[in-house]
Image (tube, rainbow, N blue to C red; front, side, top):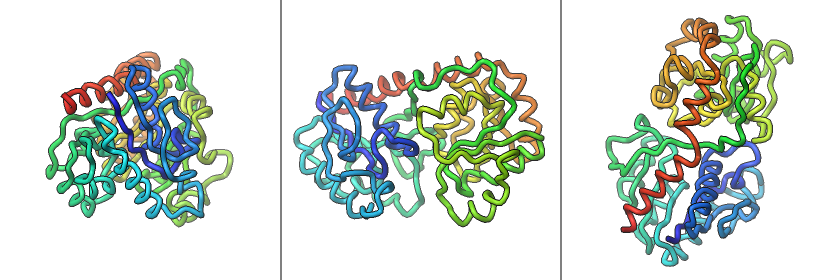
Length: 333
């Protein structure tokens, strides 16, 4: 089986710090290689993989101001489709743009829908010659047909279990109103806990008005965007991960990573959270700040080993790779 993974190029694959789509593409590439699949990873040319690496963009456009993302994504897609006849399957992780040209692919296309940025992109999906996989049942569009839902998996080896945790509350993810960073600060304040914030600033105005003035290095600490080497230690040191989202979260990698580390989650009941969090086992689902504050004390009574074991059973990269491989075989047969 010869598979082309059409990866995103905003960041390097795997990412040095932020880049969830690149992370999943990397884990899938390495897992397929281990299973004997002939994989070509189309990604930035500074990517690191055991697969055959091909591409056109020298680095991620989010990491290089000299690169226009619109231009380089178009060149990237064109390059992959020009080689499409060499493969049994093209697995698209680059959202809508490859779908606009999917009729020109000489191999079947499978697209993982990593999340819809809005209804305006749906025409590219509806007209595409591609099959679709959702990353959660909650993120499915009623306008599309799907082969399956495949929940993301993560590298369990990079997330050691922390039996004790600590007293701090943790927030992981991009700093943006959607992610509710300001709400997490208020929850931590009312709960009387220190809050550790990690993530890229995606909305500068929101950061400067609602978050930065409250960062004092004592009750609210901001560590910036942290890489894979630090993620496990920071997540594992928490009493709970706060995830007070204002939008329908398509999946929530940081939620899974926290639970695997043994740190339970307090998440707003939106999007995929009811699929990802096992209520009363790996965390609590809440509606609003008052319930979240109460839940901070409640999750402290959850067994961290049980939390980790359940998340490891459900969200390993191996499980994800096996599910995708079964889908590939169904398409190709």
